Structures are given as structure tokens and as C-alpha cells.
Amino acid sequence: MPRVVRCGLIQVATPLDADRPLSKIKEAMIAKHLKLIERAAAKKVQVLGLQELFYGPYFCAEQNVRWYEMTEPVPEGSTVKLMQKVAAKHRMVIVVPVYEEEMPGLFFNTAAVIDADGKYLGKYRKHHIPHVHPGFWEKFYFTPGDLGYPVFTTKYARVGVYICYDRHFPEGARILGLNGAEVVFNPSATVAGLSEYLWELEQPAHAVANGYFVGAINRVGREKPWNIGEFYGKSYFCNPRGKIVAQASRDKDELVVADLDLDMIIEVRRTWQFFRDRRPETYGQLTAQTGRSAAAD
Image (cartoon, rainbow, N blue to C red; front, side, top):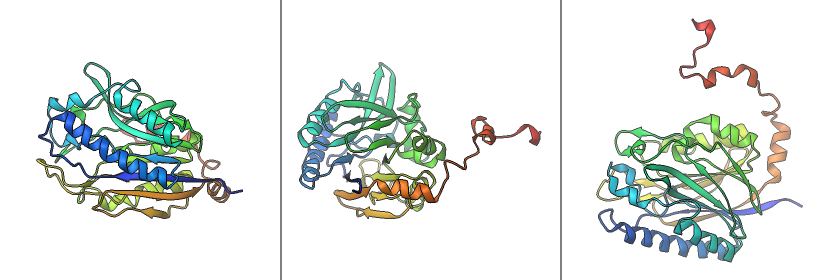
């Protein structure tokens, strides 16, 4: 029998402006997500991905220590604990992106992975941290990830995570494949005019090169007072052939649902033997800062 897993993605706009109390912003965003998670449960979603820093606005549009108050420990923090209860209630695997405090002054852009019984399986920390003008001042907030590229064996599928700016780097995407990922979730916050033309290019390419499914998640709307651009949504799933099989609109809160036949991974890899035909012994330059070879000198 085909091994089909029903997966979902949630994209939403921030309901409160950034000048409101942080506790109110967080409360409003979590409440909004809980309604959509209930909708996902009604649609029998088994694996669900939320957007980057899901319980707040994309505050990296400015550099302000105020936003350090949005951090919480993982998995001990209140948000992950809440989502553990939600996951167990609905028998649903949930990828939960939060702003993590490891210790005072040491913060990460993190996604916790919770199994269908509510068990915390582990976390992924975003590796590639942008500092891009205008409005993506992430090095002010996040330390580069230090936990590698883990793949989590959940009740329904082997799940990997790659966060936003990570998607521009094929190296980690390949490692997730080598580590056995079947579905890779990429929670993001990206605006039109900056990378929209890459949105439907890079991640289908990762899916093809590595023979897995990708769930790409972006938020929607404009966030005040920064207005760095329109978060254009268009969250989607693509299959190991690089075809987008389900996609959201660009401007609405939305739940995207797709049935992913994981047996397609075997079918595709039997045709395209990319892992067999790799030449890792020739890739040493990838770990050099400049990429220059001795021969070039």
C-alpha cells in the first residue's frame, strides 16, 4: 500500500502592530494559530509546519533589545509545552518555530519538533543568519545554529527542518537528505521584491537534488511600523520531482493541506541516483572560506 501522509502548512498575518505589549502580541498570534490548528485537525492533518518565529511579527526589521523578551527556553518554555499538549490532543506532529534562549544573552532562531503523542523530539537551530539591508537584521538577534542538521523520526515520517535564509544554501539541504529526511519544512519570513522570484525555484531544486518533499512556509501581510515589504505567503508543498502539488494564496491567512506519497521518494531515487553518483572526495573546497584550490594558486 502507498505510504501517504497528510501534511499541512499554516501562513498568517500578525494581528497586532509591533508597538503593542509583547505579551499581547504573542497571545494574539498563538490564539490565531490554535484556530487554524483545530482546522488542520478537522482535515486529519498528520504533520503540520508553522511559520518562522510564529508567535510574533518579524521583528528583525529593526534592531531593538526589546525583542529579546520574546525568547524562551526550548523545550521548557511555555509555547513548546502548550504545543506538546495540542499535538497529543490531535495526534499530530507539529514543527514549532520559536525564539530560543539557551542562556542569558545567547539566542537562536529555533524550531522544535513535537511527535504525535506530544513528545518533544528535539530542535533545529537556523545555521545561516542574514544581515541584509533593508530590514533583515538577524545577526543582532541570533547566534548561528550549532546542532547540525538533524532528522526526526516521527510517528508518520522522517522530518527535517531548514529555516528561511538557510534555503539559499544547498549544502545543508543535501545533508538533510543524507540524514534520511522524507519531508523538509522551511518556515520563512520573506518579502516581495527581495526573493519572491527564488521562492518557487530554490526549494523545488532542493527537492529534486535530494529526492524528498519540501514544505515551504511564508507569512502574509505588511507589518507596522516597519513596512519593509509585503510578506507574500504562497506557502506550498513540492514533491521529489520538483512539482508544486499544493499552494496557498499570497495575501490570506491559510491552511495548506497535501497528501504526500512517501513511496515516491523510492521511485524517484531509483531513477535519479544522485546519492550513488556523488563524488564527496572532490568537494573539499566547499569547506574552505574562499573556495580556492591549491591549483588555483
